[in-house]
Image (tube, rainbow, N blue to C red; front, side):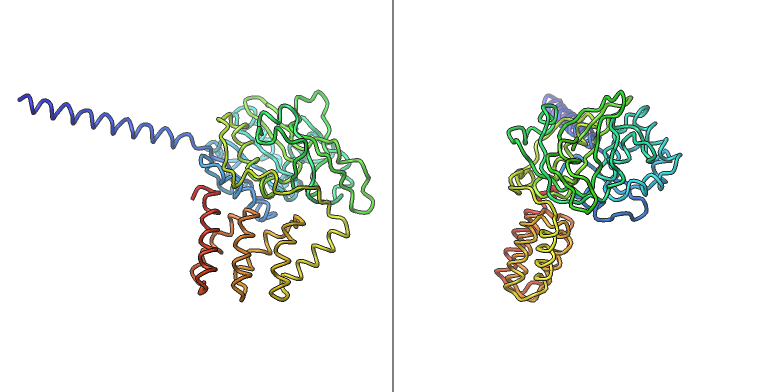
Length: 379
């Protein structure tokens, strides 16, 4: 009898432990941060891909691409945040329509759903006269008539508040981020917006665009609006090697979640060392090295390094195709380059290349680089 009671007691302890584990597992699952990346029916697919891939860095973020139909329905209540990526601000608000725009504002104010804007998305967060905007960020865009002012790898510096959210950059006076004709922001009237970073670069490479317009202007801004939070990036951290982690980090801040550390293979603020504004001379060099990607083996090996060194905006599209080059040295170098620029969206390309690779040394290099890419997005 004593042995039976002892057995039953032990069994009870096991069952309690199993149930407790299930509860912990369920609780962990419920802590997922659900993020929708807005797609206005195919606008700027690379900006959408970049945002989705950057969000995958965070193991707790569950992201998917969403449309206006989901925003204006009750389905949006399942989401914790919406990311409005780069592309065209007018196109995004045109897709939302007046009803959709009103719905986004209510979601922030009443439901506490976070909203993050990137470049064009930052435009629509503003309070800008004669521009279809949502009046959420506490800032307005100026000099819209020179919207096509230029692009490049821009310098920025963090404010004290910015250092609290991005402590990995707190000891740096200057950091770098891709900029592609993002809005020039100034505080709106009675603004409660907070500047996390200011842009230091003066971008005016397009003829007719004024000098001293982008420099010393807000580069990352945030605001608390009703029950929710809003954040905007003037630039593109989501596609800047070494800085993509800034997007999932700001999502955590905006959704009131604990800030977590990201791995050293994505937090690489030293990847770029200097500002690279796309002047006519730089654009000519970029075009030259782009052409060399179709040249001799030696030209290809040089060009792969150069398009990365020059922060070519389109290197993310060019390099994955080099995995299918006829030369194994080029294929191996391309796999390394994909890791350098963190093209986690090229994982299927690399898996296919490994499957087809006949050169054992090249195959081993590719496998190693594939493992690094997968670690970046917790695969």
